[in-house]
Image (cartoon, rainbow, N blue to C red; front, side, top):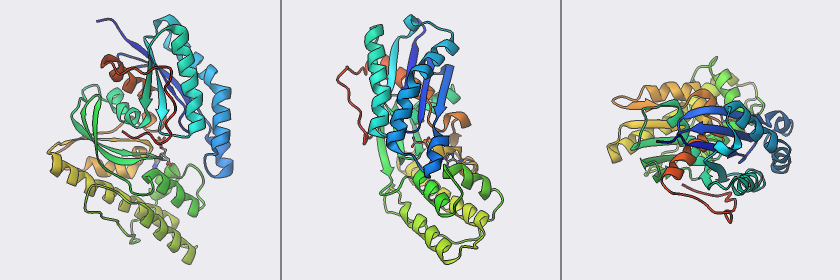
Length: 326
Ligand code: KG4
């Protein structure tokens, strides 16, 4: 079979990224221009600044991805582009660029769901991984348990009712004045702490999550006692949210009988959460390579590859969908 080269483009939040992936699983280049240093001045992502920064960087990032992959523009078989979920202005930059390039090269455009991209990061890391499996998606904008039935068929079994888990990490870090993005800061400080502080776990009857209660509990504790041991608070927070994730994962295993578990999204980089998932008994657990946990375009190219070979092609009327679901 002829090799298939997909150009992936990602601009849904604060990373401008482009990548060339061969046959869905082999990364030839993975260029990421992160805006973290700009947004950390404001304590979070400023959407307007994100869009402008994507405009400034997209062209160079795509050129670098093609150069580093050592291919020519004419070798590209399709352009896969994130069209949601994310910040509308940010999404539009990558999508418009991707549409223009696919038109100019006369190759198909593939609108890619960013959440499906995070799941596909595991196809790159684990060459043996194939559906069906359960994926616990934990990112800055989403938290859900998804049944991946095939490369293009997904069923959401449960999702957060309020905050995404990454949002909770970032807000808790902000309360403790640890800096932005908060997840990695909590991860580091938590390594020095003990899980001695009792925090509330929200249990719902189904497979949904809720992280606003624990966020408020940390806020109240910190306000009442500003001298609280921050390392212990970080570790206790990680332990409690990890339990919530694992409890629902066990329920999903029981419900479906599927014992192949995959984690994905920015929070899957958390060292404590990774260790806890590895303790799941009688299951095969997969997690993405650390550099593929947070936003990148290789995962978009990989997800786009499976859409491409299954005939899921978009047209040039495709618009950005900030609230796109699986
Ligand atoms: O997946 P992602 O890059 O963005 C979305 O697609 O939503 O996830 C970003 C989130 C942020 O909330 C960030 O704080 C969190 O992932 N994160 C972490 C870690 N690294 C990134 N959270 C906990 N521990 C980490 N090591």
